[in-house]
Length: 131
Figure 1: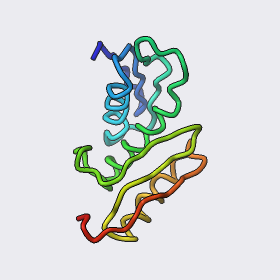
Figure 2: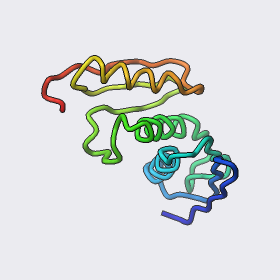
Figure 3: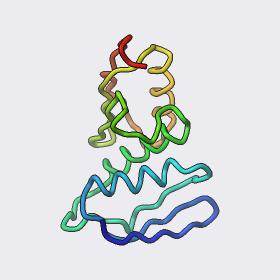
C-alpha cells in the first residue's frame, strides 16, 4: 500500500494519495467511515494506481461497511461477516445469511439511511446456523 495522507476538519476527513488495489482502497475508506465522530469522508484525491475510471461504487461499498461497523451492527473482522456488500451504479447488492429477521431489518434500515444508496437488492437469507 502506498502512502495515504489525511486532513481532518470538523468531523470531515479528506484522504489524499494512491493505493495499489481496490482491496486497499476499500479497507482504507471502510476504516475511516467506521470511526466514531466522522461525519463525512472526501476521497476526491484518493486514487488506485493505473485506474482512471470512477471509484464511486467502491466508495459507496466502503461507506456502507463502515456504517455497519460504526453502528456496531457488524464487527471489524471482515472474514467473519456472513453477508457480502457490493455496489454497482448506486445499487447495493446484499447476499449471505443472518440469524434473524430482526438483524436483517437492522442491516437494511442502516443501509437505507445512507443518502447515496438508490436501491437495495436484498438476497440475504435467514439461517439458524448464523450466530
